Length: 310
Length: 310
Image 1 (spheres, rainbow over the protein chains, first blue to last red):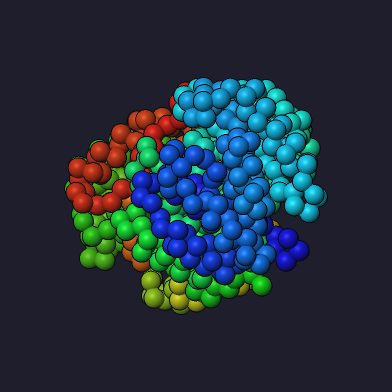
Image 2 (tube, each protein chain N blue to C red):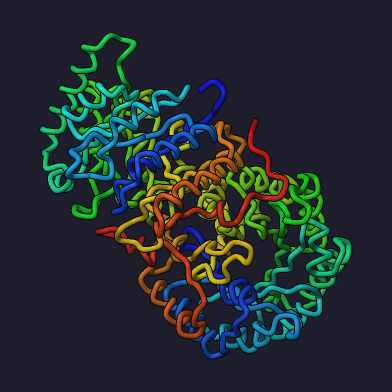
């Protein structure tokens, strides 16, 4: 990151596409990833190694990983639900694996059909698998604390539970833990509090990134607080793709275009050219007809005299 | 403000209504103001004393002020473009007058047909008029630096010009200066920089409030930075009424409902009940058929287990 200040990690090809019904053709996914990388995006979560019958939208993830790996300088990230998925991700050559652990055990059981103890077993198995690889081939391994800001089933999550699970993920062998606002419940004060809490138990170096949704409109305010706390990786989705199933009109992930605008306007280098980034929307619009694309900057345009940070 | 931490100042009846073509019936305006005050809103900018032929939407401002003054505990604010407007505002009994001074002189000439020197003359005349009143009848007088974060005509505004005009407004006799992101160009770094700049020349006590738009989606992030800098008054508009004429789908002012949600979620007391506030939207929907109402929280609902700060 010598030439950028903040890493914007595009998660649309995974989180966006898994949230909509339409299937995006593999060639369109490749064109999307190529175009975003060409616009300067350095990390893209390109898919998820889940059974194709559960998420047919992401059934071509291995092919997409192989394609994306050929793009110089791009970190190819994938989500893995378990050790079996991690095995496939490693075989495909992914650079970064993210294993979600839902801090709400009710949500974990409903969503992954696994207890916390079972997910931590998977984390240990994945870490062992990675350690067995030659050092140069080892992917980065993140454990992501999902529903960490609250759960639609359980409501608020006790801080002690967050701390315990962050510690457990690191003990299981994760390189890093992440915070994920799965439900759009985060607010800036909670972002600050949980960053402090997790760093307190896992160490400052073990928390660099956050995954925010914009369900209640606070996505960029939460991102700003994460920046103020020193985080350097922010997930976002082009066009806010995926929306929010229980909030018509509300985007799901924070919108990449708007996030990059905020960062660059603040003088933080992302390496991303906004005009080129906005142009990538045409690929989504063509491949996913009728799917809503969100974003304020694409609608309003850039301020007069705008310049991307060199 | 003993029982609240942050003053949310509703500007929809002025900034929202002046930005749309439809005329809201006077009785609907009164019902809107009554309902927002009942939801706990403590300050409402109810109109503007401009010639009725320029803004027929606000021609009934004197009647609205008289009505709103009868609501216990409500600060009744109005915009005044000049000394003549201030005279009418004082006669009507407004508690707070805001005179906009566009920091971009090009915009000032295009919008108010006045140079900076002419606007400062009006400020002096208004301050003299207020000083001539018995102390108990004197309204609070704010000079608002509009286009301070940049201008659609001039682009970026030099910091030195902002500082000079902030100082000039205070010297002219304003009680306070405000910052107004008329064009939606603000970003959190600029918010922080300009707050420091204006406080440096005008004193900390002379800058407590900010007027933000959400044209490029950064409204709440900018509001968060203003909070971090210690500002205590934030303008917002119910349903983001007014939209943004050059950005379809983009709200104009930040949305009151979403702002109150952010503040209360952060543990800051606004005195406002969100459910009651959201219910006020039905008055707007009925009186302004076809007008877009924005807001994420009204769509997504409150998080499970939500409680407004006592």
